[in-house]
Image 1 (cartoon, rainbow, N blue to C red):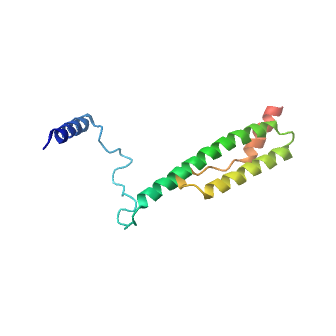
Image 2 (cartoon, rainbow, N blue to C red):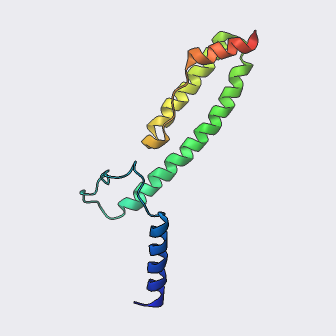
Image 3 (tube, helix red, strand yellow):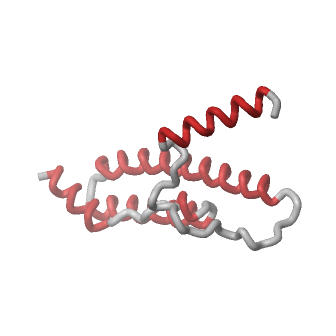
Length: 122
């Protein structure tokens, strides 16, 4: 064993003693998804690109939703508010078609937004 391997082994042993390498209970006994599947060359890179594109789309959608929420409170009427919320929900639905499951956005609740809008107006 060369000196690099010895250092790595020592650090792993110390980390194990400190409990840093313990598997959290929430992960114990869970299978690795797709472990038995055969994959084509480059599958990992394609998966990485898909996840990164999804992350960027989610970040863009989050920024658009911040702007949309500001416009909700500027709405002059409940009808205009309902149209703005419907437009935001349409954007969310479109984004959800193009992101991985972990990056999906929840649709906005029009009734809750209208209730809060009315509360702020009174």
